[in-house]
Image (cartoon, rainbow, N blue to C red; front, side, top):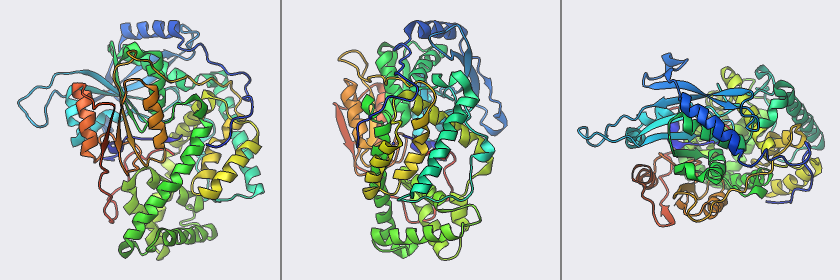
Length: 536
């Protein structure tokens, strides 16, 4: 379920029942909430607080952003044992009403954000308050981001040498051969072994249950009696776990691009659903290109555009662009367009120019950024550890092969790429958990807000409906006929109106509401890539 979502921060995983016992043995819950351990860790954090000061890279950041650390137990069953530090960032509430300079806005506390992944860093989230869409929220709230355990500056995980993370040009077969499958199985086994070798017995403690526990310790460290939290994509899942375990600690919660929290979906089936949804979104993108054939010359129908794309894939297989962009890199770049439609113009232009003989834009957009190898490898390691630890996965390759061969017949675009991303979980050496049954009963949890785009591929809409069903009293706001992954603070004023009304005034519609889609992107080259690329 890999994705990191928050639309304007860029300003910038159906089929078969699981049939095998997990490789690590019987499921391990670690004690559901681990409440004694969490309570003692939270009490310590509350007493200590967060000593905010200059961020270590302050020279690259606006002076208003500060950083600090919060200590949490590696293992909540041993809360006085080994501690790890989470790095936290903050921009204080401005108190300034952007529409009335004379009005002082009262502070409502801290708004804590997680961008998803797993493996996404929220450290730079507080800077979002500089954007017009966020100024009213930034006036009332301290904007707080952090690196979850295993990510970035918070006891970072690694499963291989980052210098080996970006491989050379790679294929991306829609229907891989048996020899190619054997090659990828060997890679997955080696990657899982690398995670265990580099992290040791601590590996089992990087999971969603502990992410939720850490969130409660962070709440206490910030001096918040009750938590105001926004989670995007995967952040909605462990946010749902938090709401289940600590409902009385919740003030307000926003679930943006909600994933399906049904324990039976975590995570193998969710990835199958995701692959199916990306096929529809890929079609949306091709239809948009076809409507602008006068600009891009890639074909006047979605089928014709697919022919142009396949022509580029064949050419790149024969001769990688710039020696580093092959079919796999092309697929990865176009997958990003399945997450965010503001990628559409630049991706279409790059494909058009490449087929006309100019590869510069395609190399710029699809080529690996070597300088980001360590960050990318860490994000992938954290993603893998959390998803593999969270639940049982099939341990028999024949299950994966059967399910995804079926799926690839109708959804070839993302299916096998998603398999290779998650296959280390088939060979995972650490014990697996029993997923938390995310749900709350009447009166247990304050009203919460769920935001979803109807055609979101990374977090298919059925997940938002399931989250809404499980969190009693929640309200679902849907952006119709749109597919951006993460819609809070984006271009849809209707969505933003509901977000502001909830966070600033506690007002929600009655159970459900719908917004018309935001406008499609204009057929022009996007001026710049996102400042923080989402992590598929």
